[in-house]
Length: 511
Image 1 (cartoon, helix red, strand yellow):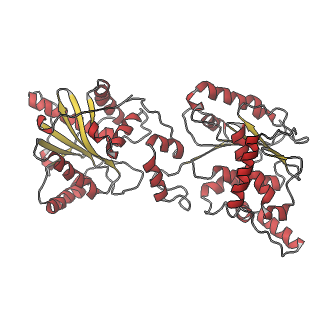
Image 2: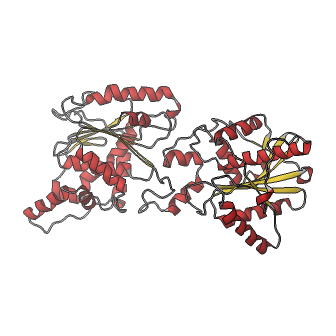
Image 3: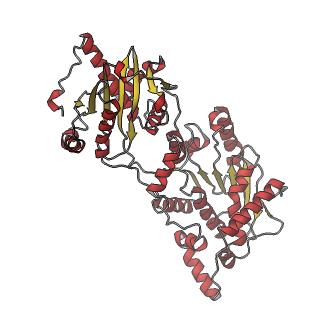
């Protein structure tokens, strides 16, 4: 195999990795007080169980117990010599580390002999391949049990061959891997990691060119008659990207998010709910969904932009509406829906959103929001308080919220009137798009610019911008605003004397 020239950047990267290894992945003490027969027996026992094997040779990588999806991935890969898998795991789920341990197991047990490692650039591919070389160089347990692996003259950064004759080559996207052989062996394993970049996925031509390169230049480097494994590693950062296209070709797709559908950590032994909540609090919904939930979202698909502006004084409004969606759950940090409550008013054809709340909170805190808005308005105008009470929530309102409002009345020393909105609502996206998008497009849906620093209002804006017909992102805030807008329109019609077929009897359940 041709030797690559080591550039200064490569040498520096190598030194950085050496330093990293010495400080964190320091070589592990080997078993030295055993006979040759004992050593062989121990190795055979370890090789018979991959999970035990990786724990022995890589204890510092395995500082958290393996998740079930790690074990299933290893089992699939080790049982199928001819295999094509797209492993779409979110960040922080150790997709590269798990694959490194599987591949080194295959290399040391002579299951695979010619391994290509591909990423978005040669520098990135070399960087991701370097832990393989460092472990083969310095891991005392590997050296003790499998012999010296470093092969003088064939041990370059990004291109090396072990003394057992197993070759590893880093390849950047669009580079030619043609003719890659290890003696008579064509590539029998191809690992593609992080090949998609944020800038590349914005250009379909780049993705198409890269995919064509893989199918025409990379995949055909294999032998037709010998088994090949192709393992794609990456998270889904765009609807159209190389990882997405690989999912359509794969024998198996393993898609694992940071959280499951119930909001629980998929690897709780490593990633605690507190860790996840911290990440969520520091980045946008779009970023979190793409990087940690394999759910790429496009801003501005339905609502291109939201309008912030000055709101008129409260006394200029004949009345205001506080409209709330209680999201019938008492869990504070689960996936589920956000609870929402926003203060809205209509004046001269414009709908103003003064302030509000959008968060996952317990029911008692949600009830407290209504009193917060009452304090915000005081007696400057008439305030109507509404709470959604559709068929999915009833009798939740009667059994849960009425007692909570009664308790809040005793605590606060005064009561507020709450009117349940029992409207039978049509499709959520259709309502939001039909009733709010034209209003917003004409600049008549105004967010209070004095509340720009309010995280609840920021979440509301973010949810509007991420709405799509598929409703792939939360839209509890816009749904709440649509409910408030409907009530405001009804009250306008009542005032104008044109309230007809849409009138409903609400007072039967008024608190």
